[in-house]
Image 1 (cartoon, one colour):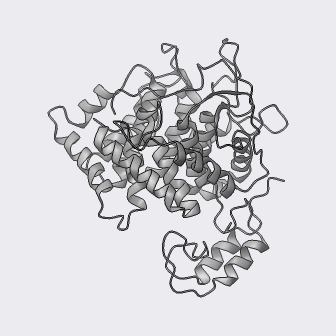
Image 2: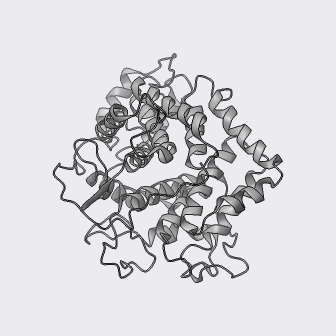
Image 3: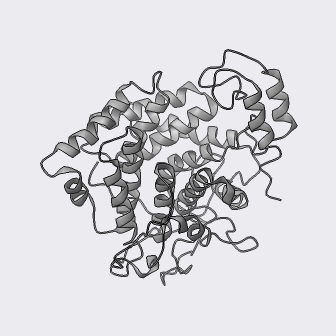
Length: 406
């Protein structure tokens, strides 16, 4: 949908008292995922014009659908898949264009019976084809799409880039280059309402998943925000790490929302917001997968613990992980996306650490030759080859005792 406005935690300063209780970092990610997804599944609209969306948040269906796909992949609960597919049907019915919806449809394609041939993939593929062959072309579409806030532009472009690369769109490189161009405008003082760390986070996430983080200059002409002068794509992960709240400080493990680590003079919190931490976590995980030698495990685990603080026992996710604030289904969907990526390969019990319990589950499924989605032999078929063998054992061994932040 082309006229979306990204919901930001930055401007909702009216914090509320949290009546419920958060899980903290004590429960397994699998259980936390279930309580969030149960709430989203139960409160989804199932009739009327907005069927498939969530109350008051029809424009943000894409982010929630992507989260429900992650919940299904993690738990194999068919109710979550049905909820995600219902949301996908709403997108196909209601969307005039795609943003976060493009990524959501690719996630639905990934869990389809045939990921290479399904309605979700066909819709995304057709979208990029039609945009390219429209009278204004891809560049014209991007120009019309973008609003006045670079961070919002970057958010949507990141989702477009992920969709374009999933279907191998002919203009996928144009979309990626546009993302880099608009990233260079993030933190430009001309734009009053800017969310720089979120912009950096979502860009790192999408760029790391779709190409190399190399020596490409982000602002080669020097016309963007001063922050990006001389910065290269390979600098993005270290830049992101520089905005994580250090251990021992208030809101440790979360992320600041401004590059200068202040509140911008608005009297709000300088760090600890859900969306900043969610997308920064996704960015770090994507960068770590692209270059494991950089080893961001400690930072990722700290971010994981910060995120879990913000999940309430009823499945609600507040805008600020510690202090509460506004509640949106969008935050819950985004949280599910992050939790799905935080599972360590080999953590079969989904308790956040790879240990003897996981080995016992692995041993029970050893040599099983009939592993299928989505359980993959209780998770023991780690490489999804259809069989539990020595390749899976190697993955388990490589991640042995991973997951502790001590």
